[in-house]
Image (cartoon, rainbow, N blue to C red; front, side):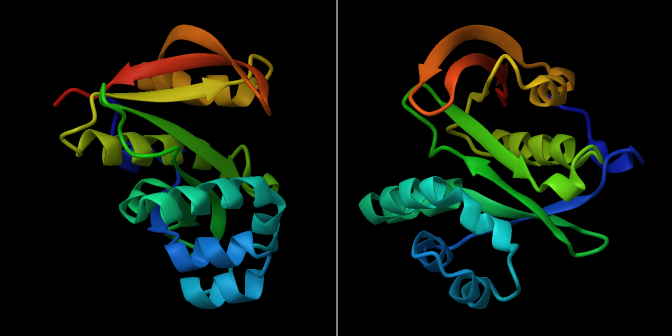
Length: 178
């Protein structure tokens, strides 16, 4: 289990705010204005740079609406209120109890501890769910920052996979058995 990052002054306190189906629909349609209105506050215009993600996630929601709670959240700095990125799971737990995390921190907020705080929050969310037994992170072998981000949480290298979009990924997992 990860250490509680709230007492670490080098790790910011964050909140994860769910992006609803209507926000995902608006992002998928390319409307940051509508997505922001649905979310209730301005979203970063850079969210529109992730059109493939929004298309994939809204397709998941259309197929299984209750999946939305496992998908994308805005990462918000609890002190400043800045939206510093987005994060979530690739879907609900599979039949073996595994969920896969994904996160993006906006470039201007990188190297400040937001990714580490985000991974901790995602693991904590997953570990509170009785159907989840482990958390996965798939990372490019060239992504030194993400490899360093997951290391303190006890992730173990368990394999490799070839992603159609991202190429070779190293698969890391950590147990969250209750």
